[in-house]
Amino acid sequence: MRNERIFAAWKQIEPGAAADERMLAAILERNRSVHDGKAKVNAMSKTKITLLTAAACLVLLVAATVIVGNSLNWFRTEYDAAAGAPGAVVPGGTLPDGVDPVMASVAVFPADRSLSDVASATLKQITEAEAHGTVELGDHLPTSIPDPYQFSHASLYETTMKDGTKYYLLRVHYSTGDRSNLDMDKHAPDFFIQLLNYRPNTKKTIYTIDTIPAELSGKGFLHVACGDFHVGFDYGELTQDEIMQVLNSIS
Image (tube, rainbow, N blue to C red; front, side, top):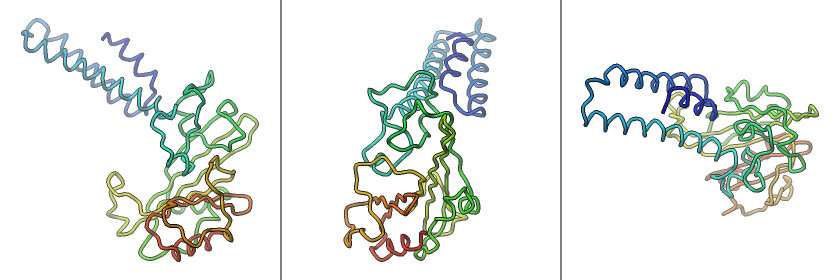
């Protein structure tokens, strides 16, 4: 594959700038090395070069598939949708003209809006202090967390529509153990709370504090309406009393 074609293919999937530079530099360096030693390469070396080139192409193909597939919801499960996970379900698996697939994968908005209405969408990791001070949603985070759970990590999804309306999804994960020793790549949070300033697009029941069932076994994820915002609650292995402790501390 020519250097120009490699660069063009890479730009189409738009990875992060740092990853872009590292992987492109590695590919170009490999090509330069092959060119400089071309006269000395034997049949076995040529086979290795072919395999390396094929591997580089495969990396590009997999990266493109993951990004586009995530944007078009090829990998989205019913649990993701029920949990109100970002990323709109696109009829027919296609994106509207002019919509960036990476932006589409993190856009959050209610059922009566569409990707065509989205002007911009971002996702960022935030600290505990930032989570509690993020727009109006941070003020609604639970103030009572069962022992020995504590803040683990948080993220904020922000979507701006073309008419200026902003939609937010604030997600905070809580875990057990010493947070300073948590390995985020291996450690699965025990439960998480997400706050939305819009009604989630779900076919599941949206409860109020007063209508939450007395027995929650098997439900796994709750949607709760709290005035002008909504709560999504993946309560993991919390007991009924612990679930109500968290929900009753959300104001």
